[in-house]
Amino acid sequence: MRAELTLQQLTGLDESHLVALADGHRLQPGAAQALLRLQEDARHAGFELAVASSHRSFERQLAIFNGKALGQRPVHDDHGTPVDMAGLSDRQKLGAILRFSALPGTSRHHWGTDLDVYDKAAVDAAYPVQLTPAEAAEGGPFHRLHNWLDQQMAAGNSHGFYRPYAQDHGGIAPERWHLSYAPVSASCDGRISAPDLVEIWGDRLALGAAVRDMLEEILLRYVRVSAGWCPRQ
Ligand SMILES: [Zn+2]
Image (cartoon, rainbow, N blue to C red):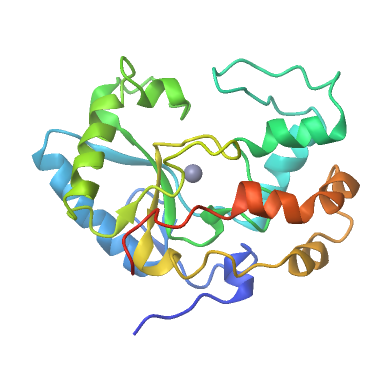
């Protein structure tokens, strides 16, 4: 039986659906079991598939988003270069932030089905994992792992994990490192509405007026993923 996540769980306000992994990261139970199997396969192929980030709460996502919106946290462009936010309009600031960071309440990381991965065996212990496109691209340390993952997905051997952000449609950057456990997450897409979010945010969201003005557009462009990102679940 497939349990549907509640609105509170989908928006990162309730964490009762999560279990802890050995490394302290937390996922939805089905995703956690499938990840163990994927990690085992990766080990046989010579990789150490490690988790850089997994579940993220609403409060954490709010702190990340507000920090970027208020200029207290760096915002990077596609090349990993810091963006000079001071000269941008609120609309431009939102575009820069949303390329890599979700609005609180809309992150797939709230669901416990989605995680960011890297190959621990490809770097030394002191290497600061940044999750940039360059790390996952040709010449980057995690390129081989991601190519192996591509092959596993194409062959139907990825234990339900696929990439919701594989293609660049001008919204969210293609994030090869972001995997999603489709048997649960495929039914989570599109369940959060604009009115739900406005109510959850209250007056706590930085750039809140600009976000509310553009909300339907933001949901279409940055939150909903394209059909066909995973086989039918
Ligand atoms: Zn991610």
